[in-house]
Image (tube, rainbow over all chains, first blue to last red; front, side, top):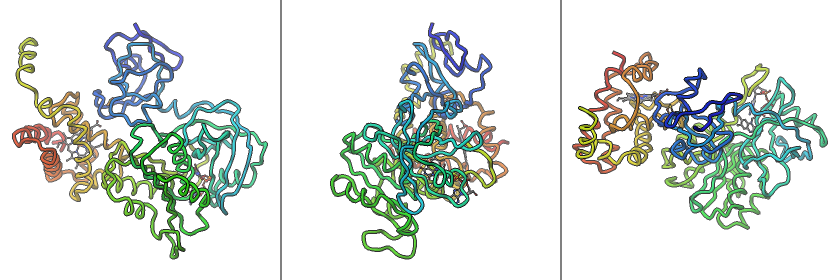
Length: 331
Length: 133
Ligand SMILES: Cc1cc2nc3c(=O)[nH]c(=O)nc-3n(C[C@H](O)[C@H](O)[C@H](O)COP(=O)(O)OP(=O)(O)OC[C@H]3O[C@@H](n4cnc5c(N)ncnc54)[C@H](O)[C@@H]3O)c2cc1C
Ligand code: HEM
Ligand code: FES
């Protein structure tokens, strides 16, 4: 009989029994509803072993790639170690050394980190940067592991922001920090190489998109890759030269900086970035869409991308949700 | 029916779910249906402030149920799933709108009227549970 492990416990699991039923029988609370592989309430992750294909049916590709599965329809035929989604979010921390700090514009700092142990991540995922026991914040990965030696973050300075002020004013090359992760589903998956990719971000929401675009190009994506970066005015844009160079050298990549303020100099589109992106691209049937940055933009763009024809499973989003004022800790 | 007889029955008479095309048919219908729901001013507000990914999965649950497919929901589950919508004014009109969107989704996919009527009847049969009365 295969062995099911959860945390420090393990049990033989009868043929035909689901992981959900086995865990519930042992008094382990696992959220669930339909018990038929439909509602996705019982999502878990395999930390060792491979979940049967039937337990991953209907999941988006990035979840499959990270060994997520539905416990209610998972009947293991070989040993399987599983973890809850909560446990997955609280992986232990990894030490890293700051290798570089560079202002990309007046408010965005590029932070280069060297992990002491190799970190298995995909461009566009995020890590949690730990300042101390009371404070950790999520930052997306702009680096591509096969291409960049270290991790690259883009940290935007937020007025009175505790973590971002620390990054901008106190961090120095050589400092040691802890990180946790990686986490998140916002990354490129091999699949249909001819599919169009629409990338829309505001502010430091460019970080994951810069990573995803380069990752897709490096993996030989052949469909169009369209990146729209939005800000109020030109001071909020960054990496413009690199992105224009990339657009010149890669025929299937284009870049549109969008300014929502009163003025848009030549070479810039004027308006809200997601309005422009959706107008310019038209029907999103068969497109894959990545949305990162301001939560309101992400929410609205998600709905409109879906209504413009993108399939729900092809929409990847990271809203840069901020902690409410006064909250001492998050994540 | 004994189990032998029910085997015989399902082998000779395809279930509604099989006639509609099973899970691939549900997958084909999910996005179309959810797009209609989000664009329908009569009911879209019930679906606005919830996580869209979770919602899409729940639409799949809804469609599987209405297609006569395999699920384990009970009337009690339907009561619980919709109880929080009652104070927000969930009423017969909203159920009608959902059933209309369901029928127009199936029509768009080229499903025969006779099968659409059967799907409608399954959805209809949950009305009192959904409305918690
Ligand atoms: C999945 C994910 C990925 C993220 N990736 C990135 C990234 O790549 N780069 C990046 O810069 N950030 C990113 N963020 C946001 C980041 O985690 C922090 O929330 C942000 O840096 C603010 O933290 P802080 O400690 O500096 O501010 P806090 O001390 O938490 O906030 C201070 C005050 O500023 C307000 N505030 C916070 N943010 C803003 C804002 N944007 N505009 C106006 N007021 C604000 C708060 O409400 C609060 O009153 C991401 C967030 C998530 C959830
Ligand atoms: C016509 C009969 C209906 C059926 C058979 C039905 C079926 C379902 C099912 C199976 C679920 C998923 C439950 C779960 O696993 O948590 C669900 C959830 C939901 N239904 Fe219905 N439904 C019906 C009508 C409606 C109507 C009329 C509305 C509102 C206009 C509605 C709004 C919702 C919402 C908002 C949820 C999600 C709740 C959540 O996020 O937890 N439903 N429904
Ligand atoms: S409980 Fe609904 S998918 Fe598992």
